[in-house]
Image (tube, rainbow, N blue to C red; front, side):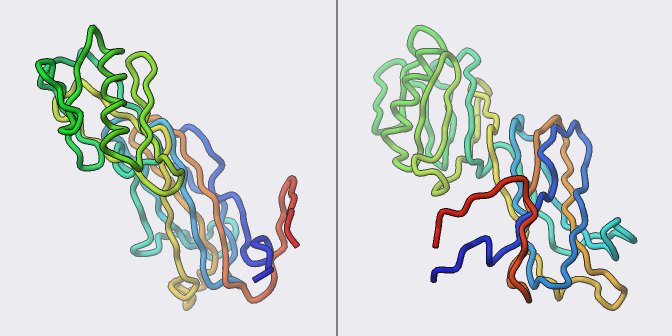
Length: 239
């Protein structure tokens, strides 16, 4: 019960966060000899509507990536704007009848007699008004989502960080979503590596189809020995 997390898992840089412009980047290959499992946590930012970050775990024979190849079924894709941590919605001339769906709830612009309980909001005098009015209705109907507005941009995030994701569908094209932050993970077991042919290292490969900021952290666990962390700075305020 009193064991420190740093004494239970090994934490390393999977891929240094970087801006990837329709390309891919593979991180360092780490040895799995003393570890039963590896968890790659992928973070991505600034993802335009419809764009993706594909994460694929690779295996190799050494730390230099010798004979690298994929681990089957060890891949995950972040797609904007689905299940994101934080999303923006930018208004582009919102008018009566326009609608957008947030986490399955439809929000409709209704300038005649908007009913907040039905997900309706007034466009007001301009897009700034429209986003402010939409924020009020989102906060009313989606208790797990926090909506704020600034000028023509609506920002959506979990009210309790880590306890909700945001998914958006812009049916009429006047409220354009973009992902500010998104998270994904892939966990693999040591036993699934091709040990018969000498594969005992793993790495993460990130591929983007647009200019997207992405990075990853590797957490290795269920080890044979207590881990030693090699980091630039540390502080553990537990006993």
